[in-house]
Image (tube, rainbow, N blue to C red; front, top):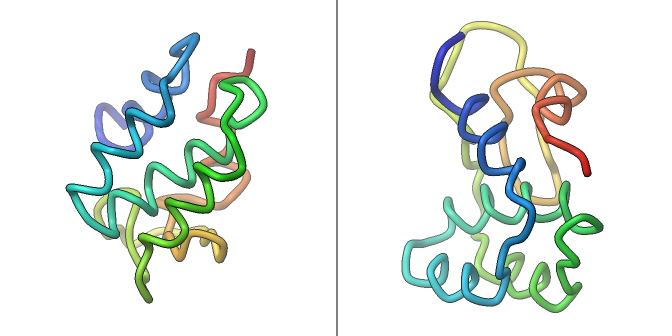
Length: 102
């Protein structure tokens, strides 16, 4: 696949640093779907990016009942992050493999 959720996750997760507090301010203006997507990625990269638990909790507080989608609906297997009420476009292990680890 070219583009889409996988490429976005691979690209963003390669960043050396993210200002999670600044990102929290942006996400709060966008809505619950963005909070679920960003929360999932920040959880996956929490150790690398030194994301404070309070930041993750603030994102969780923004997430509604969901479910939300990381990418567009597809006919293949999907994964699910119960913590973020987020449907992943591939199996959990596959979606997590898109994350660039430091």
